[in-house]
Image 1: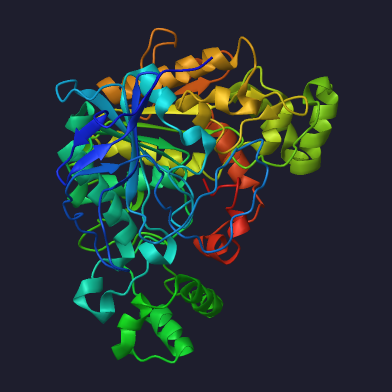
Image 2: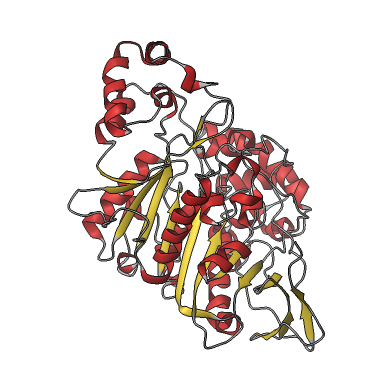
Length: 527
C-alpha cells in the first residue's frame, strides 16, 4: 500500500545555524539524511561547518568512516546489513521526526552505532532505520557517523599541540554532533533539554565514555547501554610514541615529518599500522583504536568512577542471554529430552554440570537447558560490575534488563549479540527472522515502549510490563525480556560466579579485534 510522500521546492525545509536543509516526508515522518555537523582535518579536533547560502538537500546518506579491512557479508539473516561508500570526512548525521514545530519539544533519541571504536556506521544495520521508532514513539531520532579506528583514536599528542586530543578525535566528533543537536534540534521538533543517548556494543561503550567527558556535560540527559560494557582495552593515559615512531620508521620519515601522516592515503596508513602492530603488542605498548584518558576524557567510570555530572544521568542498561551464539547452536533443541540436554552440559562442563544445570534452572526457569551452553559472561559480568558501581556512587537511577527471547530458526535459537536492536527500533518487520505471529509484535511493543518511556521520563515502567524498580542497595532488579516478561532480583549471581570459575574460553583483547577483525566482525561483537 503506497504511503504519502512530500518533497517540493518549499517543503520540508528547516533553518539550521549553518543554513537551510531540505528533507522529505513519508507517512508523516520528516527525514533528513547526511547532515554535516562538523569538519575536521585528519587526527585533529572537529570544528563547525561553514555557513552556506540557499537550500541544501539532505536526501542522501553521508559517507561512513573507512574500515581497517574490507567488510564481508556474513550471516545476514541474523543481522541484516547495508554497505555504504566510505570517506574519512564522515561527520554527518541522520534525523527522523514527526514534527518540524520548534515548540513541539519531542524527546530526542540519539543512536550511537556499534562496531567497537574501529568499525560500523550509522546505517550499517537495516534495523538502524529510525522512521518506525520516531512514528511509534513520537520522538525525534538521530543517528551519527564519526571517525573510527586510527582516524579517530591514534595518539599523536607527543608530536604537536594540534594533535593534543587525537587519541579521542572520534569521540570529539560525537561531542560536536551533540553540540549541533543542542543548537539545532528544536527546529526539527526536538527538545534540546531532553536528549537520550542509546547505543549497542561499541555504541553502548561510547555512551559510557561520553558520560565521563566533561565537554559533553549538559548535551544529553539520559543514557541507554545495550551490551556495551567490555574488558577489551586498557584504560590508562596514552603513550603513542612507540607505535608512531615504528610507523614513521617503516615509512622512512622522521618525527619532524609527522605531518606527512595527514597526507598518506588511508589504505597505506592502515597497511603500515598493521605491519608494525604485532611487535608493539608483543612489547605491551599502546595500540590505539580505543579512547584514552587525558584532560579531555576522564576515563571509563567502571575503572575510575563517575564524574559528578555522570552521577546525575539516569541509565538503562542490559545484555543478551547468548551474546556470542552466532553458530547454528543446538538444532531442534526443543525435541531433546532433559537427559539428552544434560549430556551436552556434561560434555562441556564435566563434574560441574549438575550444579550449573540447577543454577541455570533457578536463574532462567522455563528456558531450554541447552541454553546454558551459551550463557554470556563477556558482556554480562562487566555490565553487572558497572551497575554495582552505579548503585554505590550515582544519584540518578539505574535500570537493568536482559534479553532472552528464542528465535524461530533451526528449531529454536537463543538470543545473540544485536538481536534486541530490531525490537528497540520497532523494525522487526524489516528483519525476516524477527517475525513470529503473536509473539514478536507483542515483545516489540513492550521493549520499544519501555525504551521510549525511559527517554521521555527517565524510567522504563509501562503498563504492559511488570513493575520495574531501579537497582539499589545491592539489589539488581532485572527485567527479563522474553515471550513472558518478568522481573528478577539478582537472578544470575550464583550462575555467573560458577561459570566464571570453570571458564576456559579464550579471553579476547583489544589487540585481537584489530589484528583479526573477523573476531569482532559481522556479526560476532563488532556491532
